[in-house]
Amino acid sequence: GKSALIQKGLGNPTAKSGYIFASGKFEDKLLRPLSAFSDAMTCLAKCITVGHNEKGGLLSSSGGSSIAASIRDKIQNEFDEEDVEQLRRVLPGCAEILGTRRTSLFCSSSQAQADKAAFCRGGSGSRLGRLSLNLLGGKESISRMHFAVRRLLKIVCSHFKGVVLFIDDLQWSDTATLDLMKSIALDGEIPSLLIV
Image (cartoon, rainbow, N blue to C red):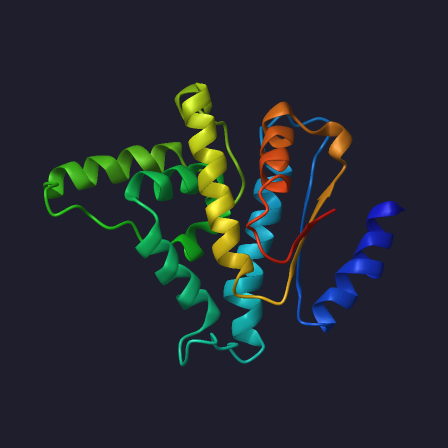
């Protein structure tokens, strides 16, 4: 149906033209906030880390490092620890491009281990698990998450000719996803991004 048409008509040609095509799909039976967007971002992260390494490790325009390493370095330099952790919880499939968590010089090793254990208990692999109310509670937290996702997309999109995110079965979406998509669509500073 429509999904196959988008994949053949948009997905395959974009890949041949040097663009990245990533997709995520809402399921009518699953009520997971941001699930399709998280899946699309997981697909995007895999394209960056695995796909480009298989194609000869496309190099960054800045020189000898891979695009994935360049993106990871830029994220580590521009994001604070709290924003990276929030992105890890909301977009667990992007962990590889987000890089490893830097331990604070002021944080004891036992505190770092406790933080790691708390994070591991809340994580769920490459699929989005249950979001805690603390994560998406309050307008400030939601705004901060939107801002972090937009900054992540700005960094990723600036390294490619173009990025296409296909969100399938949007009729099953949740309010959190629609609000995030609106936030992304209204941000005029994300280069070369098309959301279908």
